[in-house]
Length: 352
Ligand SMILES: Nc1ncnc2c1ncn2[C@@H]1O[C@H](COP(=O)(O)OP(=O)(O)OP(=O)(O)O)[C@@H](O)[C@H]1O
Ligand SMILES: [Mg+2]
Image 1 (tube, rainbow, N blue to C red):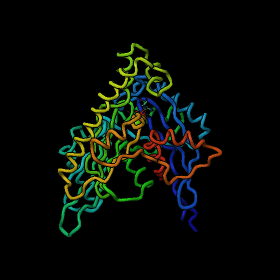
Image 2 (cartoon, rainbow, N blue to C red):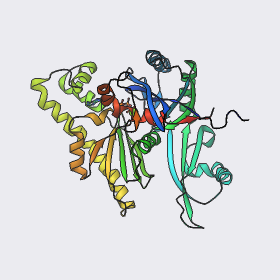
Image 3 (tube, helix red, strand yellow):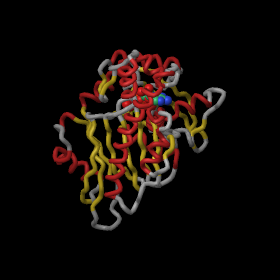
Image 4 (cartoon, helix red, strand yellow):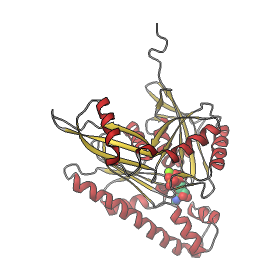
């Protein structure tokens, strides 16, 4: 008898280490689906994580350890996701090959596809199996992540006695969360607006066709509020979240919102135009926004008007149960957009 037969692989704790806040989400299997064990977030000091790099590993490590303690998370297996200039995602079109030959081919030819030295990166790939007929070529998704940057994260996590077993990419984690929760194959644009970057992932018939990170985000609002209203960062953050009254400065703040959000919308429209020029037969059905920046009042309506598409807020718990006695439903609803990536990671399993 094989005791491991039928045993399900472990789920990992999803850890989204953003430049503004760390988000953690732990799920468990329940019935045919999942339910939330616990989740939470903690804000990081400015500069601790920047451009996807871990500038202050000790500060971040302590923040994660405290968060795990507060949430009473005992599972040591975690998954993280990376983004920014240290990771390159590229789709290449190749002759159909079996898994082993494909791997050999990619290792041999990688430098042709990615602008990094092959020895400096972790490389992964997935055959998207886009070939429909015999003899056709197929699209293969290549991911290369700088070892130097990834290793900093792994070392930091091991330093607080966690076991990093999954390293995801923000855009893929978002897609994973979407696929599980929405269960459709409509053509959709997933846009995550964080504090310092916007991740755009446009999906046509289940396949990501436009994916990019852009250096804009909700921190722009904070910075401009600091400059225009002559307040400190904490006050600006409080104004942004509506905790501090602004009275006669209201017009100035509205002006900031309009100019920053216009820039975000222009970037999204550029990506949509690229999508439609490549896939005119499969127009986008809608946009789904996540990340803290998606919560800017009026943004969904503004974006919808500009793109002529329905725009909704991402609900990463659409098909995930939770116990209202343990997790306040109002808190869950409020934090849902920020939790999209952490949930996408938490749905991954570990084979270790
Ligand atoms: N209601 C709101 N209106 C405007 N901004 C908001 C609101 N709620 C949260 N934010 C902003 O969202 C940002 C945090 O979102 P999120 O947690 O998605 O960022 P992050 O993942 O840490 O950043 P990044 O992914 O860019 O590294 C902060 O800048 C915060 O001020
Ligand atoms: Mg983020």
